Amino acid sequence: MNFHVSSELDYTLKGPAAFLFSLRCIETGGQQIAAESLVIDPQVASEEFSLVGGMNRFSRIKTLNPGLLKISYHADVSTSTRIVPVQSLNVDGPGNLSPEAIPFLFPSRYCQSDRLRQQAQDMFGHLNTPYDIASGISDWIFEHTAYVSGSSGETSSAVDTLEQRQGVCRDFAHLGIALCRSMSVPARYATCYAHQLNPPDFHACFEVFIDGWWYVFDPTRLAPLNGLVRIATGRDAADAAVCTIFGNPELTRSSVSCDCSDMNFIPVTRDSLAERHELIALL
Image (cartoon, rainbow, N blue to C red; front, side, top):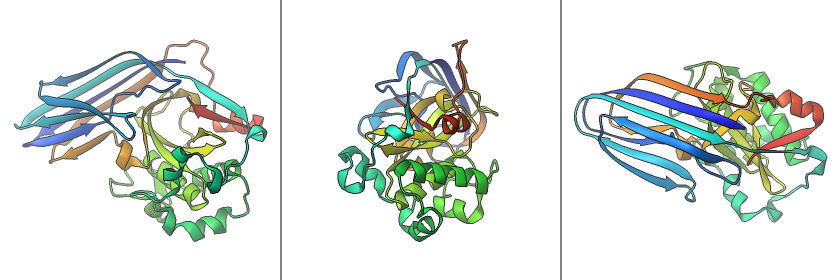
């Protein structure tokens, strides 16, 4: 699939500040960037670097004076997915996992899986395979958690979301990750541009490691799973936040889009995968 993604962020600066932006898409085995641009207005000191195994791309921007700051990112990106039958998957227990998946078994800042272990066992202990566990958790979150814009903040965690039963995509992903890890299923966080997301915005989902691949789940069900363009991946939003600010700027405008240029785009959704007993991975 071929996508054009863009994000435009406007800030009012009240004094010196530093920003860590994760707006630029990453390149993977199945995701390639044909063209991209990041424009900062006015031009200020900036630095580009990578974190989390050299995959996630960050832009560090430092400002000194009050005024306005505009950040604009545009990219043309091609993506690939892998769809496999559920019955073809082998089961990997913690004792046989690939080393790359092991860090995603442990609790993290926003995904306190150690605090949810008993609740996860009570709700999902009857499920046997990693697929059944991850699918059951994703479906449970969709059915029992309300999507409410503005209902959470930067300190909200999986524990908070489970207690309050409401949140946004970030919270849905954190809860899915924490519950999966509580059941010994490696899970990680992904920030994406999302085609057909309404209203358009940055989007978060989670992935689980099964039989050597990371498969994507989205408990919000707000965007096609094959319409996701990866920005960053990590243990949780602490590794893959779109923007981390040091200072007190005010965000005054945000515009995000993800448009597919392929006329034959056919959405792959949770329901279409369940009907065919399949899973999808973002390559």
